[in-house]
Length: 193
Image (tube, rainbow, N blue to C red; front, top):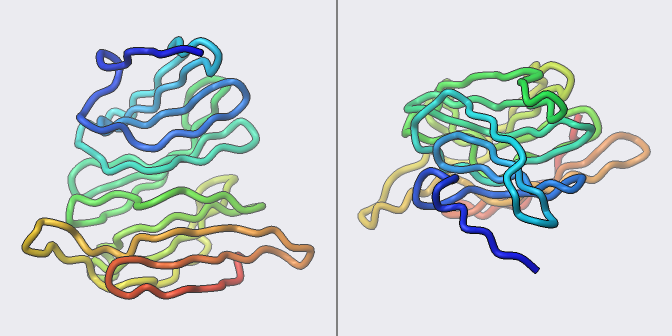
């Protein structure tokens, strides 16, 4: 249907994850920038520049109710951003000290009232944790330790506990199902609240 050269638009050697919502494709790049493109033509629509210039291992953003949620990083610090798509301004942003030049890992997952993400938590000594924050204002509601402290092996491959998180809404609340990767490989079922 169409093909668009975005070499001059995207920064870094490898783009991050993308999602499609309401006629737009939302694409993160390693320069902590969120780009939107028309899904029918591929034409750029708008760009949000976070102001952080460090390469970020961004993954999959999430979007609901006119707000896109994604992670950005710079050095040992990273932010989770809730961006209002109508005016391209942050609704809120929360920052963390991550260490190891790592950002929010894997995808951002949306529940009914909370946003979930994995993060290499410097406050826990660099151990991986799953966080839940309020959609409304980014207030941290809880965190669960989910993996060992990452390390870099001889091949340069890191071993943080990445994996997948799935949210399921239930009449009595919500459940999170997740599986961690690399060294531990554990399947979890958690109360989402």
